[in-house]
Amino acid sequence: MQYLVTVVDDRTNSGTEEEMVAITAFNERIQAEGHWVFAGGLNGPDTATVLDNRDGRGLVTDGPYVETKEWMAGFWVMEAPDLDVALRLAAEGSRACNRKVEVRPFL
Amino acid sequence: MVATLCKRFGDLDIAEEAAAEAFATAVERWPSDGVPPGPGAWLTTTATRKAIDRIRRESKRDDKQKEAQMLRYDDPDEVGVVEDERLRLIFTCCHPALAPESRVALTLRMVGGLTVAEIARAFLVQETAMGQRITRAKAKIKANRIPYRVPAAEDLPARVSGVLAVLFLVFNEGYLATGAETDPVRGELTAEALRLTRLIRALLPRDGEVAGLLALMLLTEARRAARVSPGGELVTLGEQDRGAWDAGLIAEGHRLIRERLATREAPGRYQILAAINAVHTSARDVRDTDWSQVVALYDQLVRIDKSPIVVLNRAVAVAELDGPEVALAAVDRLSDALDGYHAFHATRADLLRRLGRSAESRSAYDRAIELAGNTAESAYLARRRDQLRA
Image (cartoon, rainbow over all chains, first blue to last red; front, top):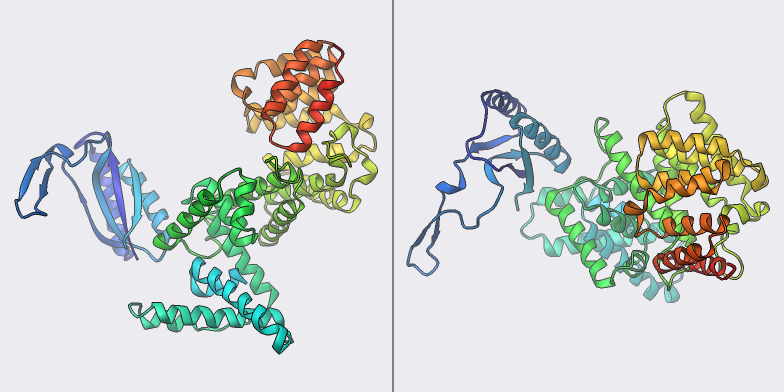
């Protein structure tokens, strides 16, 4: 079972050197333990572009599809047998990156 | 049975529906075929078959391996297994990923076997809204794969405190039921909460707070028969017929508290509340109550739980020790925090009455009656108000 662990932030590119060290250590550990699927940091919402090509017109708009005070600054996709394991990993991830995280199961 | 099925199939909906189908089949067949020698085993076996049929119908897309795992059999009639499965189910229903109000509702539905209508009534919520709340919680369990198991040792302390909070809420709802239509005391809820707390205690015999909550429930339940008058009015602790208290439950509660005292570990909230109840249940007459001990225990409780409700309850004991005037001063400092709480106004009303301030007492009683949700309590407050001198 896979879970998306979203890192929630209210400032862009706000990560510190210490946080990066902690995140790398955490990543290496979950890779070794077989929980790692994928992870990455994202640029801020002001770099987003929204497309709507449902009618084939290829409508392009600058900016995020919805303005929010907090947004996804990065994420992990983790493999875990159940939510208890996913929550424990997410708690360690939150501590490592020093941010709130949200856990959501894949369908 | 739902717990057993749930364990095997990992799905609350399938378990519930299969159980319902098995009961329906029994109602249909037993009158003509006769009741089978082991009715419980018959129902579980039938429900298991129904569930497997259902999964087969629905699982064309599902992998065969999972299905094979579901067919695994263990003895459904073994009590230990069933109790273990109830425990697993409690931990699932009280999972921290679920909203607190959903945890209580789901526990009552899945573990306690109450109907959605009964739970809705207990929490003054529309039945449809309660049904939706339970459905949402079950969907979240399924989508997130919240496991059916007793948590790992490192998670257990945090998870147990969540379970205790739910069981305490269930007990309190039974002991002082809300709603104009419900019985003032609902024995089925207090009994269920007690039974489940005993289960948790069997799992964690050394946990102080588990023992504390069980003792607290026992010592409260012991007074149930004396708590409502034949006329349906709440009887306060001081006015209760102590001969009607259940001596067996009191002895069991006192035994648990002595056991905890012997460990010399610092007590938590439930243990202190239980100790306060032990002081009350040790007094043969209300005049024999060791109020200084009660106040000392409340002081201890305030140190770990500064909530205004604890401070209010402490003030009630202070009134007995230092008089109503001192107590009223403490109570009045809580007016901002507790203005919407009926017990705050009921306590003020009683203290004002004792100080001879009838007019103020009357308006405090009015406010308490307005806010009280329990029929027996409203009746008691109304009588007290009407006894005030003009």
